[in-house]
Image 1 (cartoon, rainbow, N blue to C red):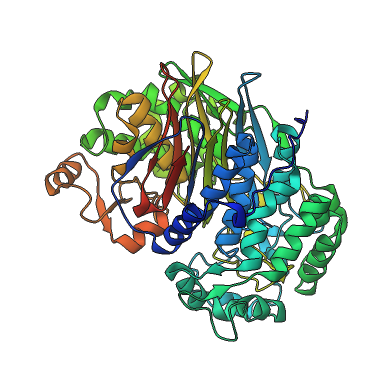
Image 2: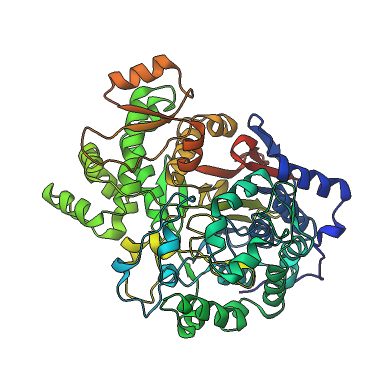
Length: 579
């Protein structure tokens, strides 16, 4: 049921307080590091990855009477514009958990990819290379086959219709304004352009996109004006998401994909619908943990891990960065659940040999965790999977009335994708190239399960925590935060500031898999104790860690006072604002 809109608001950045807009724009460029710090939000709270400008847009939405859904949608749309469509996309995917304070209900929205009905041989789609510098895609003559039906904009439309209060066009204003007026190219953007110049130059429309700051490859402090994107967003704001699915953008997208050997059709575009479903749910140490519903992989992975943490009493061992046995156990659990989703057949066969027979939907249950707990080391040793690029952004919003949005959205590919196809100012992802396993397990035209796993935690029917994580190690990041805060009873800033747990997809050979750890993050005596506990360690430098770690944003609600807070950690590009 839709909420009735309030009187029209105006979120245009030209109306923001001048000093606040200046600070947000300067922070967008500077990305200065600082120790994790707590941020309070007595009237409203917005925390998100990468973009202070987008957070300012979300705060304005809350100030002008918007709900958590309005603010989260505004942030996500603005993040895409400020990222220049590089690691998030208006033609990407979205996953939402939403707590409605009036009903006390948590809802799950999956706006992930769907496969093309005409693509019947997914195993023959060329895989993309997870290295964004790769030039391999330049020789692929059927790059259109690497595409999928996007869900992001349909997800924005669906969440607004159910939980929004501001007029639909209003939530697009900051994204359109910055597309029209330009974004200052940051040092990170400049590196991206250098890496991806040849891929973007493959097509005429890609060259047009590349040269939106001039005839040269964009450089630090150039002004990047996205006029084509502004026109597309303006049309969606006026006509709704249908403009991208049954209207002119969809027609252009299908034509561009098929020009490069794809299997796209307007029937598939028109048919697309995001999935509203009941969230998955488990109890964790007395709290109720909600995760995305059964159409995803991410919700199962998070809840399966938490159930194993509780079953094996990992939380009682002490923090993993202080207790080597806790580190070993938690890392083994995480390897099992993170890579196990790619090897369900092998792991199910192993479980049957041990006399364990469960349905796939049982993975999130206590009974399943109890049954497999004795075999976690063996099961984890059986599993391995290729690295899965997951360039994304995360958002958590708490509004004045206590409604909560925990949202993740992604291009689910290398930066700007590897196709060089650009439609209406939107670079096109090649996500099918990294979803071959999933595509091979579904019918053509079906929804493709995804790894996104935002979480809302309830205690005595009231929310106490919401988190959304991104990155290749997003499940590990979510589980380590929940274990540290809810299990070890540590404050959020301490847990955020602890060394990340890193997934290792390189080897599943029993006894040979190394645990990746950030270089200089642990005391040498601790690493020696880990080796004594049977853990083989491989240290990674800062650049390597940045490519494989998880990054999470979170909102914490005090169970007693109801006070809201978050953690800002600028060294990992996590920002927070309250008002």
